View 1: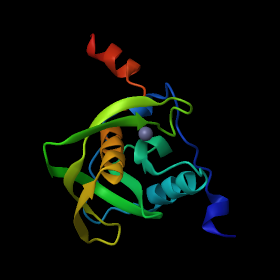
View 2 (view 1 turned 135 degrees about the horizontal axis):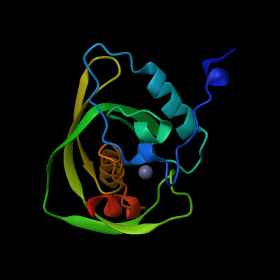
View 3 (view 1 turned 60 degrees about the horizontal axis):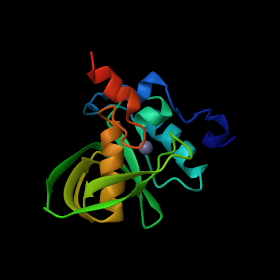
Length: 158
Ligand SMILES: [Zn+2]
């Protein structure tokens, strides 16, 4: 009877065109629970997932979830406000491209802000691994994934 049993959300993978779309901002008062529910369902059913963006769950809205200290943090209309100059380069994977791992350079120290699903907002500094996860998920909201960039590059040839 739980809401989880009714949820049929499936991770979008590989050449699914939704992964190349830019997402729409969430409007004030918009009910995001159906989207967040799908995202949490996918994320908590995958033991390796540390973050997820709405298009990976089939929704073109600017919502991400990142695991901070094992707790999934929902971020609505997330933004990178500023970053320090230092970067780090590490291998990154993505639930939408299973088995692929690619070296990606990211800002190592960032200041971010976002709205919460309760109507509040958060502003916080992320360093190293959480900063990497955030930037990875933020890319997804613009139709970008550096773990599997081929299709995006082909689009740019037009
Ligand atoms: Zn990803």
